[in-house]
Length: 302
Image 1: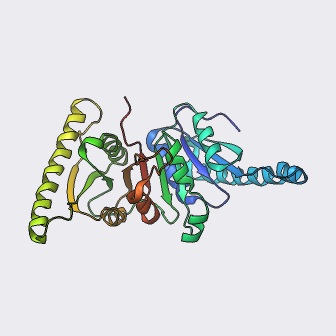
Image 2: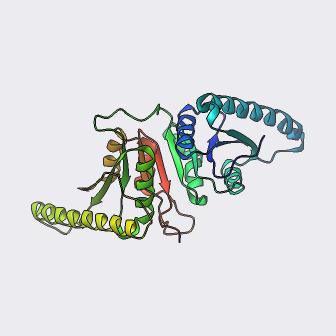
Image 3: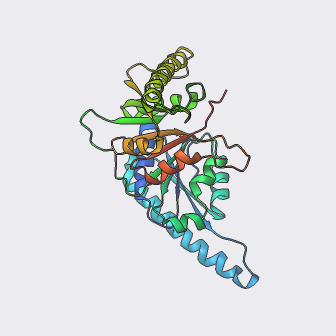
């Protein structure tokens, strides 16, 4: 396969159709003015000597055909203005995908399709998204299999971002503003507040909580202004709203995904080195979201 251009959108495909991820990846490459680099990993585990010949011939041949089919479909979607390249790898999926991304010159984003697996299959099989989230430092987009394109909303396109503590959300804010600008969308920042359970009076607890929510929403606005002042993001022409609401968070974000062209979420800082880099809220949203979900590092580089 030909060498990819610097800074491509990386599209990870398997042996099943991935039209939703392809549609998003091509559109993203066209927005960014770069190419699409398709990577297909043929999952292969060490086997006995009697299966070496079958593995080396049949598995690779099937993988090459799958890659050819994916490249053909991507080129149909992209047209002549977007360069599409590809690479076949054989091995364990997450390891090989990470290696393929690390071999590239400044990849923009990695895109993969969220498979609609049953709960049992998800418990048995490792999630590729979880594995990549733990090891990649490149933004990662998970596209639901049923996604066919941005929804048509009366007020125009919307990018939604879930914002945790204002002081720990710089990377999410920077990515969300950039995504809103790239999509020509208004930006809705959603922040949830919750209080410890020691308030005996529910009305008092709610009143106090709403005050906390308003204060934290104001802190988010101030942090946006500070980042703009530092040159980390450009707010000119981007309409931004901030909404603070009472938990639960995942349900609100899933609801927002039905009218958004993109959700932006921060990855999780695990308490232990081998812990999940998604966290319970992000994991739940990925499983149920109706639109693509962009996962970014929890902290801004530099």
